Length: 457
Image 1 (cartoon, rainbow, N blue to C red):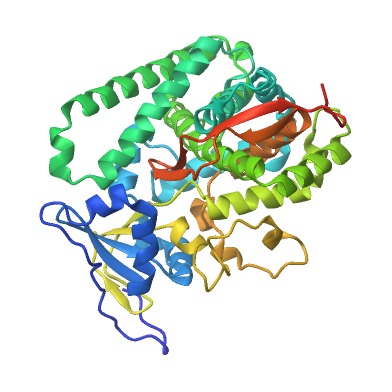
Image 2: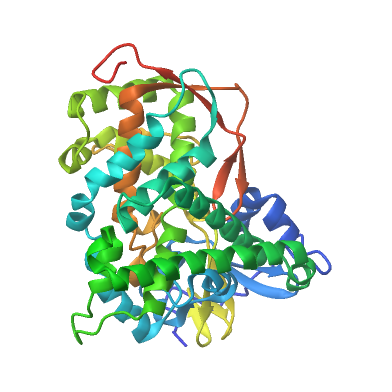
């Protein structure tokens, strides 16, 4: 057990108010997710909530969150309620395993997600994005969250498997992933007894998982039989070797990693892009500045890796989207032993949760946190501590797909800004709804073809 510093003393972990019989705090977490999470900060740096009768220790303080993910991470293994449910989908992928297995898989996969490797796949990723965005129809509204999910799934499938995957298979991947990720969050926030009676939903989840795994297994068999026909990152995965031992990955390991990549690099950046379209469409000044920057940097030609690095204001917009509308809002860990975290004594084998939403809306770190303000990320703005901005996590388990996500999001905004002016279809508040990510509910955008500038029709 770790010891408190001289400034810390043992503190009683408070229980959040609103604990309901049989449900605990599950009702509040499911129906009033963001408001409930935001309220926990006022009760302490660690607050106990109950999912049914199962206790969960929610870390609300940014510094304590940083410790969980970095300096104290050895005491907080991947797992807990959400981690265990994700493992139903991802198996023993790099996002769900611990210890030596995690370190080995990360060593093998890390080179496939560094900046230079992703930059080499920018063209095929951009073409996939362009294929979706150029197909929008003048003045015809679209549902932003679903469309951006499809854009990101198309971009990642092209990067993972190459540009030859049939369109029907792409759509099937999208539908299967939506079913599975919604099921994970339902299993996480609902009491165990409630999950046991959701027979139809559980069967739908099981069918989707079996189908997704079957598709991946068939692609692996085809890739083993004809390695020259495999494309993208998938081909590199088949050939990847541990730099220390020279051993490759088994088919089961490749399947787990492929499913992990699909599940973690589709919905989160897709949700972030939907929120980006919302903010761009309803803020004429932001849209003008993004469009002007894209025109100046790209000059009407397709954006490349060097162009993306020059889209400074566009990146500020996306950085603020990931803070203000950060897709991830609840992640869990599992304590391996009793832990003293900043004076709060957390028992062994306990579910511990942290929330990007809580950290990113802490007024002590981000003044006026409910205001969307890309200018807070400009070079001359006050510096925000790296540990207080964690859309992709921190430490040894920081998301491997971070470079892919930034590249795909910047490409998408650049492609859209070059072609379309965006307008809200309805002038009314857009409600955030927590599923696996915090998604905008009924966000409908109307695209109008640009009539001026390098990207004008």
